[in-house]
Length: 338
Image (cartoon, rainbow, N blue to C red; front, side, top):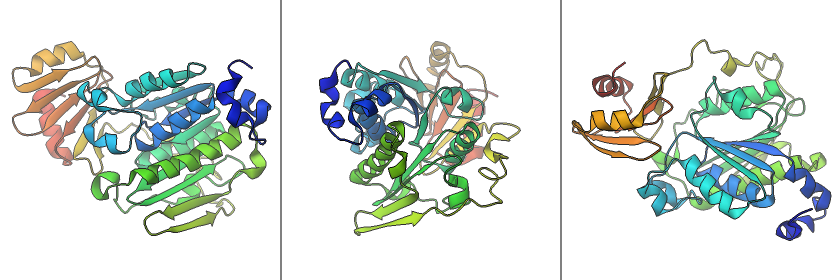
């Protein structure tokens, strides 16, 4: 094994050993979201020697990310780098033994199968249950394990869901979190993120090295501020679950992908009309009506009305400064058209 010294301390851990390390080096994973959880996950698993680490994120680096998203720095903020680009750049400097692949995109019904192509495991670094259920259904249909994680305030939770072994996320938690609490509304402590992602990474390492007998069959939850911690043991899957029992996969059955999405707690609405955007052309068009800044990855326009437009080449536009979808559509139509 080349560069064995890099992984020597991990190999000395008997349940992994040299054979487990060899297994890691031929595995391929997907991390959905390169924010707080995603950056910690990618950092651990790239350093551990997972052979191909692919991650996807639709957003770019902002100053408020730096408190907890450990792969980014102030230069990334100044350059308005997409998170996937900044993370790929950093991780390639950490471990040149592995393939690091960052993709700037929104995870949708249209691209989820392509993103998951050939992967052995999917890890959750998202911040909303709409995307989590999409991942859950796609994973169970493809028989690929899904490592769930969530962090908000001083609380965190994590579990690994394995098709044909455990119930799925949809079956276990029902309709999802309806509390409306997000990092952008009630905050989050950085150590909580580290703990959740570490629990996720450990379950990933167990699975990828074939240590199935010690795989945790529960959802673990904790509150680091109040010193609370407990496990919710998995029960049998429900006969009525549309995903892991009936194999209907409702998140994959949508007739039309939603093109307008309010990003909860962020005063941002994302609009995607399904056509590519030429950043050079749009920077020039908007420069007469807004304060425009452009990078190779996006165009930002500060409007007189107070909102901001952020345009991406894949066709997405963020309308920042409002959660009102009607207002966002009005601004979009005024400056971008429909």
